[in-house]
Length: 441
Image (cartoon, rainbow, N blue to C red; front, side):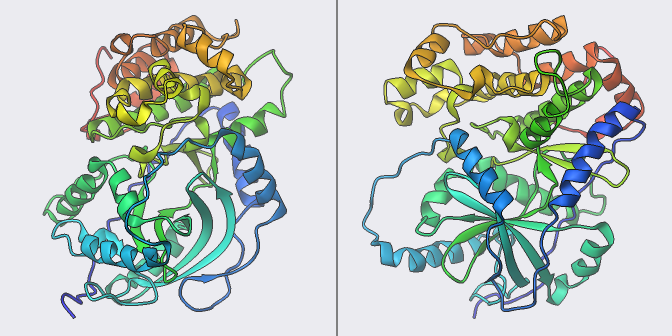
């Protein structure tokens, strides 16, 4: 049976709580908390492993339909010699090879059944589908850990941790997915394991969505198991926009907007330090966790299969839009860079500051040509001058003229009194962020 040792180390996540925010900031997070409470995961009845329960709720159906207009564009794979009916068998072959990796094989777990490499991690019940993208669906999930990981059941209960499952659609080939994983993701898992095995492990603040493990469901679909966050930033923006008068201001106060911009920049700077290009940054790919205190924390998400993504509409940098127009984007992977992520970050900040989608979410041929030619979204006058300059710098036509995420983090710190106070109060634990250096403070 090979290595059937069931003792697989679970690396606890580090959660950081923002303290001392203003009443206005707490009100923003409070509305997010209420939304999260009203859409809590449904009760999952006992059943067999990988058991799917329930239907898609009407609210989720509506959200999924609305989201289709700005799904990411995905890389298209040429057909190969594997027949469709052999996908499940081929997926298991690839999965066993991943489990056998000497350094990060423990990242790939199974629930409800053993493999010839590892024993099961426990049981997994799949609940209601609540979101869908171009290549995967998101489900609420209930995990019962077993064996040497059974202590995690009490840990999850104590900390209120819940899970979601990102399930890649039927027929998706794991060997194709594997080619889409940025090298830095699994390299980090290897380094993280070594860190927690050391006599003096370091706890790092987290501004990116943690993926617990990759798993192969019994029906041959591959999935990522992740901690559940309350909602995404686009939904939070939409909810806040319902409460304000249009065209007069953005959805957030200055200090809340600056906090959101700062945390997204920190998450992106972490990805940059791991050599991971996101390729599809936008508010709907930023998750928001709301704590019982009303404080909230942002996590950059949906980067784990980034190499297969070609971005989303007008969030894409002009050099990528031009390649899409010429239909040779797949032959020019070098266009996807930290600089193209910075351009998308500018568009995400535009969402945060105005509540709107860039160009109202439209992308026709004329608009594509206009963006390639230098047109950018019109920034309202109520946006402060330094933020307008930041957007302009991120939207530079020449990628080499765009700032790095480290420079963006420092720029926000230097211009935002609120962020400087949070840094001074050790809220962000900057001294423990080995991927970023704050200067001039």
